[in-house]
Amino acid sequence: MSSSDSSEFVLDASAFYAGIPFQSSKNCITTNAVYEEVRHIRRSYSPLEALIDAGNLIIMEPELTSFNKVIACAKKTGDYRKLSQADISIIALALQLDKTLISDDFAVGNVATFLKIPVRTLAFKGISELRAWVWFCKSCARVYNYRISVCQICGSKLRRRFTVITDTTPDTL
Ligand SMILES: [Zn+2]
Image (cartoon, rainbow, N blue to C red; front, side):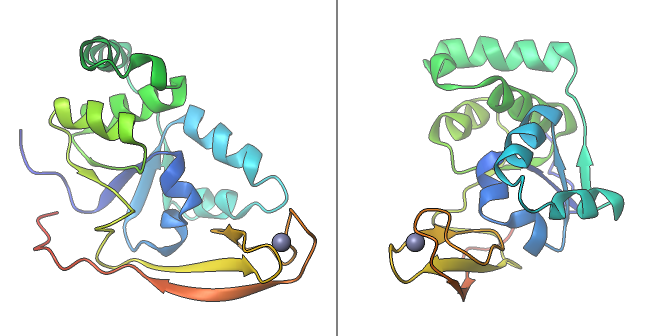
């Protein structure tokens, strides 16, 4: 498989929650199913539409053949029951486009690895240009990866904190 184009990443929902589309210098691609999932959660704030308007976030659907390949692989690895339709769609899109997939979901990452899709996780390696703001609540310690002013759990005013995700491994992307 050829090396992935470094100009774009394919993102699953966990990558959106981590703020990747807002912080990455690369264009981002996702599927409609993933977009619907994250849009619902962010209903009080809609920066995603601005990214789409600016051309920094592209929504595409995988072809049925790619979708079916992912399902067949997931059944083999035993991950099928853990995957949502959105999960399957985003793996299929990364497979079809031969792009790096960003995900923190173990089952997604496992199936993608079996399909030889390059996967970056957020938890420990991150992406080299990534600088992420998080909003945190001093009262209940809840952390939000998106910009809101008041805690959705306890109603306290949130504070902002800068998180730098470093990547010390040689970047082959
Ligand atoms: Zn709170």
